[in-house]
Length: 139
Length: 86
Image 1: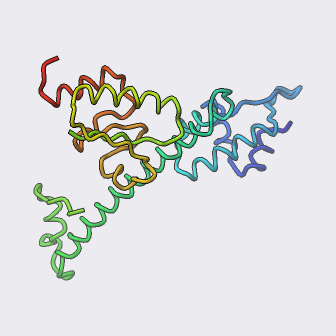
Image 2: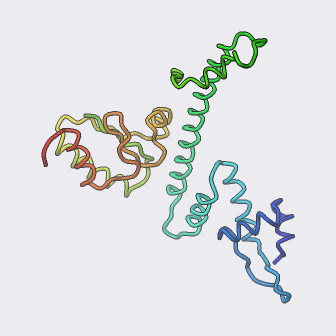
Image 3: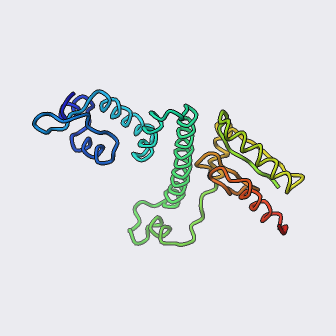
């Protein structure tokens, strides 16, 4: 059993973040010291490593909470987790698509601005952003 | 009319529901084009159609259900599109 400070150094997560995880029900202390300090065990450290890896894969804290529930639910199977992973991939691919469209829109604006020395009031990028009729880029 | 179900294979409960939905759908639209697509094989197409959750059902290119509908819900959606009275 160890204190929040030790848990923080073991998992490279700040004390504040650990308190936030606790508030959000993602971790809970395994007990208390005689002085009343919260104490954590190896399971808390495992959960924090799980949270960090899942965040790297793009999962939000509320999605991670669901995954943590699935992790210990008897009736859950690997397929449940796999479906969530595939849904996350769909969301990421969809964001990539949207960002590519934004990048294309910027290409168009940059190409239209041929003269960098123009005064800002004649800036074609600003003029184009002010226009309401910008056509979406062709996918 | 074309119905496309985007799913992940391996879910036996989903497969049983899909069988029921297929029966209901063909009961309403005889010449229905019914496609069951593994989302991992059709990822780009799924993203293009706006599929973000599984299973999802697309009818004639429009995302209509973002989770498994009941047979009654699918029936209603198909009837609405055929313009047929119940």
